[in-house]
Length: 187
Image 1 (cartoon, rainbow, N blue to C red):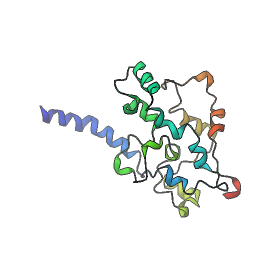
Image 2: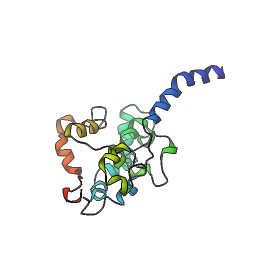
Image 3: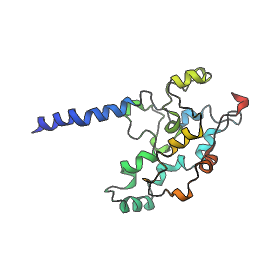
Image 4: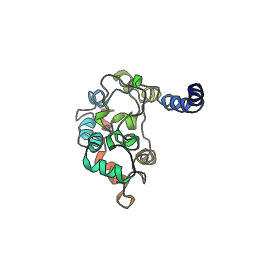
């Protein structure tokens, strides 16, 4: 019986798990690493903007009684902090193989830079970041249009989210709250 279950796992579940990891071939370095360069006014203070945003507190919200109440109302059998349905949007890299997370990466930091811009190990160096094309080849995701950005936002900010209200969701307004472009003078 055990052999039969193992074969079923190998045939069906294992390929799905491997496919998930194959989507991410770069390691996650965490917001602290990104913030080393993206903190100055000249650079655009991206880490300051992120720390003040709901994204940086997304994991913490899952620890609340309100989050557990929402999870229960949605029929989840675990607390919000333990639920894949919640973690998938409240934590960067929650479902990524541990070998792809560096020592500085902390899921407790919530929705971090790498959720939107890609796992940063291979583009974090100043040498790579000085050439945007090289950075993109090394995993950096840059949004060239508002449509690209909105499409990514909608992966979490959608009707599957129990607190999402489409009548109050103006993605331009939402972006303006967290906008963190690099100033043209520093490019």
